[in-house]
Image (cartoon, rainbow, N blue to C red):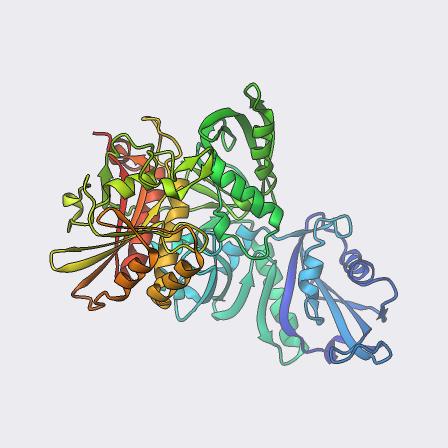
Length: 599
């Protein structure tokens, strides 16, 4: 190992590229990287470092350092049994860029994490948009790794991989615009060489090299390309969302929400989940844009105004954080306002939308060119004198399902007014004499807030009804993507789950373990078992059975929504609604959303 020369090497071509911003000598860069491996990644003395060799190749400086490390094999706990692993580190520096090769698995990502730190302060990540411009040709993409920005556990996959010739052409302009590119394999150069690129990890790869000359030629070609120009491209694949690393052009925040506590990753801490549950059930906010990306949150607790929080965005290495400029509580509400402000410490829990077409999701900010799709399937209801801001019946501030139908909540509106006897949105109507079977499935694991069964025009209609209270009852309230985002995800996810797992079986199991399910037939109370029996007896012939997914969200006002034209807010909501409509129809059901009719 002590006398490794370049002629002995035939590395797998997978390199880490970095920006040598101050044109630091290649020897210093190489020594700094070896020091990180020896002292930061391993404890000093754990690896045996051997003699470094160096030379100049076509104006590029090359440094090679072999090292070895003793490791206990994975198949034993005995520390006296050791395997000796031999590895090598290569540094190739040319112009203002450097490439690094590490034979040890995982070392590339480990060293990358120290870029710009005091240990590797001379090395910076190559700007993502610069890598995009140089190495991604949308017409020549062979493989595409996508990461969803729509949040975890919605009805879309968190990630997916696509392959084929000119694979970017297979992207769906509507469905795929909520994904970002995480990595790509594409053809570059006159000889159509295929490379893989992960711009977020500063990683470029090709595959095995038969000898050193092949490796050397490929590395220098990459470095020459990096030094060739300073152009950038922040949107290399036009359909996909593009993360940005500055706040230029981000302005006019109009919507702010936290993610649904029922849709969080299982590994999230209980502290965050408890905070989400408290905020989701008790608090509402109204967003007022201030200057550029800054905004003010008007915070309401149980529909009572408790103060303002002025918020400024900070972005660093694509990560967003929220800085509180000031808090202005009303009298006696300081603690309540402080409790809400805690969520701003956790940007991964927040979604925020801007009229400029930007959205904050999962701690990143994205620019999406929302497509001009139009959704015209709203059903408009006036909700009479029911409280559109109250979702469920409450007694002394606590949920009490036994009061369904006795108060003015949206749950009570469904119980007292729901009617399935219509066959088009133009003929939708409510009733003061409800018919059919109604089952309240509220609670953890619910398939819907309500399930309604009725017969009409020689068909049995099963309606899965999802309800979300309006964020405000002001007649000047604007469209809110956040108000629809959670409930639409729930509706689609639960329908698809019900299609995969027998709905009757699932409801039977839930009803048998629940003490507070409420059921009615022809508006008169019945036992949950009676409803399950009815559901079990349904004719599943598609000519006799129609399934509807109903979303009740009275936050959207008819007059405001219909007058919006060429507006990014409406585009964002329409994309969400059309995507949900497509997903539900693909499961064989109808989709209907009910907004507020202010005529």
